[in-house]
Amino acid sequence: MTQDGINAEQVRHLGKLARLELTSEEVEHYAAQLEQILSAITSISAVATQEIPPTSHPIPMENVYRDDLALPGLELADFVPGAPAFEDDRFRVPRILGEPS
Amino acid sequence: MTTLTTEYDAVIAEFDPIIGLETHIELGTNSKMFCACSAQFGGDPNTHVCPVCLGMPGSMPVVNRVAIESTIRMGLALNCSISPWCRFARKNYFYPDMPKNYQISQYDEPLCTDGFLDVTVATQDGPQVFRVEIERVHMEEDTGKLLHAGGAGRIHGATHSLVDYNRAGIPLIEVVTKPILNTGELAPEVAKAYVAELRDLMRALGVSDVRMEEGSLRCDVNVSLSRPGEEWGTRTETKNVNSLRSVERSVRTEMLRQANQLRAGERIIQETRHFNEETGDTTSGRSKEQAEDYRYFPEPDLVPIAPSQTWIQELRGTLPEVPSVRRARLRSEWGITEFDMQSLVNAGALELITASIDAGVQPTAARKWWTGELMRVANEQGCELEDLSVTPLDIAEIEGLISQGDLTDKMARSVFEGLLAGEGSVSEVVSSRGLVVVNDDASLIAAINTALSDSPDVAEKIKGGKIAAAGAIVGSVMKATQGQADAAKVRALLFELLGVKE
Image (cartoon, rainbow over all chains, first blue to last red; front, side):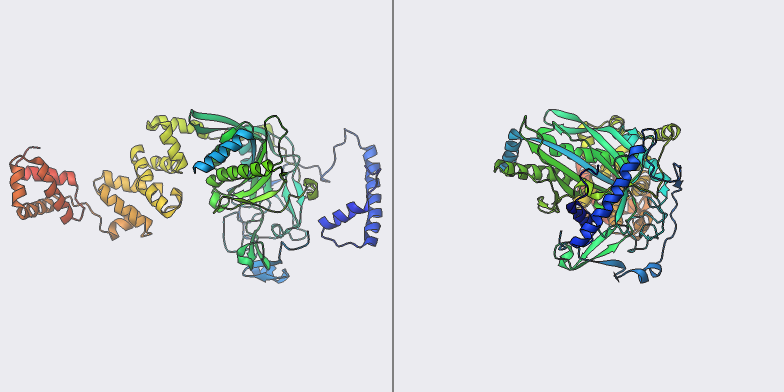
């Protein structure tokens, strides 16, 4: 999995997906760190066997549901002060297209 | 039209279309998928929101049991296998329609897999059945609604966007077909018939109101072309096709467009396209992100879903009659042809007629009102029958008044006019418009005598045996009573007065 290591291009791609602007130094820095994380996962994979299913939740529980009851939520006054921008009862966000893709 | 048809025939002669449909259905639950906010359509912006659906740190989702039950019932109705164990997954992307920066969805472990839905298409050689195979049915949450400000409401040229999160978190079920092969020239019709059948099935299940115009059923339409014997062509995905007619049109348009491009030796790019409801054209949208860019991983805030066989069997017991079986049954009960039944379905009248019958209206009368008077008005207003302000219960009330002799057919039309004009309930319209059948013999006889003395010559003709002349007298009595008399009764009284046998 990590034989080829994680290259600078992959780090830049991840940076783009995470909307992070990375300098070349940072790309190198993170590549080395991610490489370490991946190698840690490789060592875990080495001991994992078919009998041990991968864990996605620390507590072994299934089927936790709630009844379909609608309850009042928040009032505008509860969350508007925390919003960076709010207009016409809606959250205002920067333009969506036109950003470099 | 002729040139269009010819052009389409030429495409079919050269290429095989393959279609695929991804349909999103909003469930009609009381509350959202992962929180207790109301899942009602609309509402003032950002009034159906809480820390969970606003993606606030530390808030935790909890799954709505009814949403799971509805999805299992949908899967069973679509002949799917129900997974004994599956999980939700995070689909990571940055877009303001989801405040968490991810959508909770299902990825490689959908709740329902491998089903089918049979759909019927009318052809010159009679009805033809196509089996549409279902790849998967999975659960996710709907996104918030964006308003693009500046740039005339379009995303292009907008200066900023405004977001309403009322819809964010409403249970959304995605039904994905396998590639639908061998439909040939019927590809557009098969696509439309599939969506119509799916809609009827969802309505019969009672899991969603499936109103395409309100977006509770939305379609993404995949189309590719290949020459016979060649590998499958590259597909495009036309997003958010929001009416049955548009589903059909978008397949046809995309087939014509791709054929032109392929003939010119160009490649088809795998991309998202937008359908223009006005022109019927598709235009290029953003190119599709690669699936791995979403970095799906199992949702750590939710535990697995492991429906027991007992639960599944219990839900199987709640399945309704399959729409095609039900249509066949109603057709024989009502004694109508397959063609007539298909017209009722296409007109969106079937459910309204059955609801009227359930409310006590005779089948013939129910069909008469919905496909006659009301259909005419719906066509005039360019809306669906169910959007009119007349309900099956109104029809039952009006029919009740007619059978008691309190309303004539003609007056009933006036009641419909009043209902459509928003003048209130049936009884309010009847009283405000003064719609009362003049039934007492004394006033009718008085009106008849007046009419007779106004036209003594006609009176003589009738006495002389010219029965046909009675029409003129009945007509003037109806006029004098402003159409509120029962014409048959007036006629009978007239002959009685003149001592003439009919």
